[in-house]
Length: 248
Image (cartoon, rainbow, N blue to C red; front, side, top):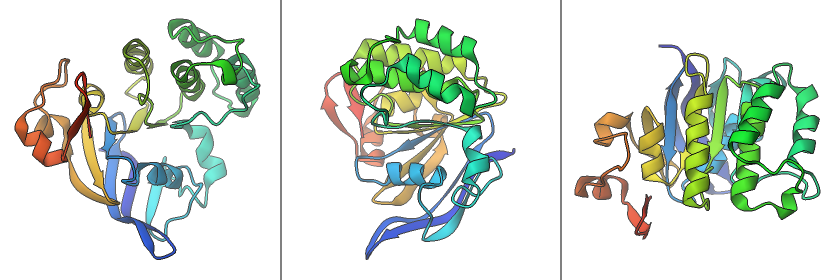
């Protein structure tokens, strides 16, 4: 099976601190991979490496057949990215963001942007500074999906969302992504969302991969509600921050 994303022994060091150590995994084309880990595990750093914003200290990353830090200009039109915190000017509205992005992507689909904005109830003419976190994240998701990216990277897209906003975003992701042509990597600490979305799971702990495999091998069900057996608490060192939400 062809891999759209491959990491081979990727390490990243800041000064004397090893942020990532010999990280290796792959994402087959047309699948969803959940990168699970607590805050500080190295998930966001991995995202920045995949985007070509950082250069690995050692090892190699290939995304869509390109090396991100060397061929970022060719790679970026093939990627969609939803950051953990919207990186948009506060005065800008979602409509202005879409208008700014459209000319930069030959594959930008105005119909998809309009349809997903309506489905997710995105306030198109409200400045980002006045949007709730859920509204801002949904607007960023629309921006990431509208060019039909081959690889969609999501960095904690569900964190801080209320249950309604979370379900709306989840449903849109599941219905919009054409899995024959597109692949998703979602970095999250939410075990339930990972179980409902992903085909494969990679667990990152203190910059190292500690578990990897198919969702059905690690989680007993993909359909909600997802049970949390005792063994998974031990496997993922999981804790419950909210009685209604199981997270790493």
